[in-house]
Amino acid sequence: NAGVTQTPKFRVLKTGQSMTLLCAQDMNHEYMYWYRQDPGMGLRLIHYSVGEGTTAKGEVPDGYNVSRLKKQNFLLGLESAAPSQTSVYFCASSYWATEAFFGQGTRLTVV
Amino acid sequence: ELKVEQNPLFLSMQEGKNYTIYCNYSTTSDRLYWYRQDPGKSLESLFVLLSNGAVKQEGRLMASLDTKARLSTLHITAAVHDLSATYFCAVDSRNTGNQFYFGTGTSLTVIP
Image (cartoon, rainbow over all chains, first blue to last red; front, side, top):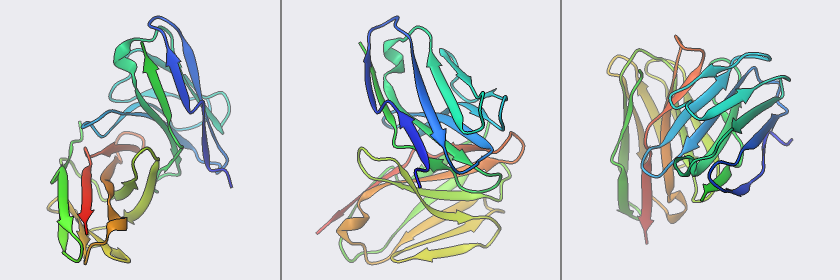
């Protein structure tokens, strides 16, 4: 069982470049999430989705966009990367009222 | 906005000792989750607490939930080095689409 798979695992971007992070889950979960993790700040929710074709903003959505065209995939886009977006990004998925399962993370550095 | 606070943020303890990590949250919720994260790794689910008074135990770890006090505890019994990790609690918000709000984490180091 693959669970939650994120690609890529590492990426270095120059300021102003764009990129898309892909998250895929094979557990048929309705809910999917994108978090960023920064030292001393825990995990902060960027965007989330409650089902195919839906997305919603979390705590820190600025500078990011998301899409969920298929139930199993949740894409996170950075249109114009900034150094402040240097972080570790985690995707997660869940059913209603159960724990979230996390991907392995993407370490992004913006220079 | 739902706030989740953990303390302590850093914990250094000797092997064989007991200690408790506390997790307070700001609004009504009856679902509380504990996760473990090893350095450079993802988050692993430890416990799911779904009602007031819930208690779960796995090995040297025991988690409890008091929804009236908006408090969860993670108790460590006779710590061993393998328990060294960062521990997060998280609460989901029934009012906002099953979002998970995380505490800032407790970095635990068990010293031989």
